[in-house]
Image (cartoon, rainbow, N blue to C red):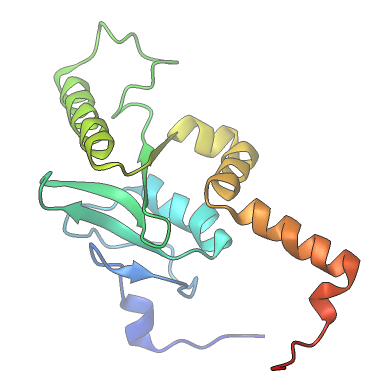
Length: 172
């Protein structure tokens, strides 16, 4: 079945702070947002978040911090950052004592964000680029667990086994 989308829908890009529930997968190339859209963020949206079918806000800005987080899940009050291997100097590959000025700056920003979420009681999930590309099944499993999606699936499976899932609800 071929889905036809309005030209305006195809050209729409997620604006910073805009809630995204589900969007058509028509266009692969994304325009840069106000804060810049990395290829890693777009890939993560398409390969993980859209498949989970969970509501999220892309590039959520917190004014009190004057920083932007990659993703915010408002119904769960969880933040998520996807950290590029080079930009955030993944310690598995980069000696933390020999970072260049850009990597040091990004480390300081990450520390500010970590401190801010701790002080505000908001859970923050950080996922490394290496894991997104090389351990995708583990990443997806962890996301399902953190978002409570595995628990929901188990409850539905159990309800189907017992027959409760198929019983009609009466207004009694």
